[in-house]
Image (cartoon, rainbow, N blue to C red):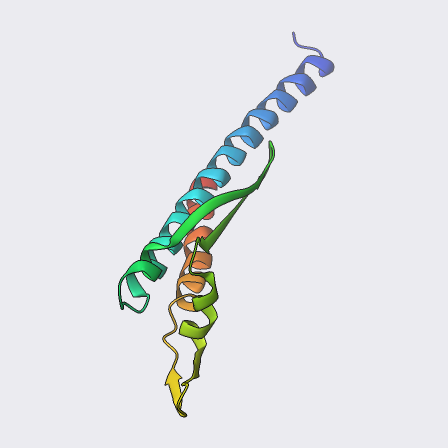
Length: 122
């Protein structure tokens, strides 16, 4: 017959295994979402030479045993991101309208991350 202490230890071990699996699933979901957001931004970015669209990348910003933070950014064309997203004034007068490509990808990323987390934990 198992003692109360043994039972409590077994429960704690089971909870720790679940927490470790949940941490792994969360990190996988964050990586997949960051990659998807990067790909969507690149696909919908304004194309002139294509260098801006190709400049998007993901990087791990922070990670510990329980969390992961990823950043999607433009490696060398970051100055253009706001101008292309929101529009800008032309040199000779007038305006260039913006082409939203970052905000929609971010919104889709939030939904994807929520879906992946719910899927992983069910």
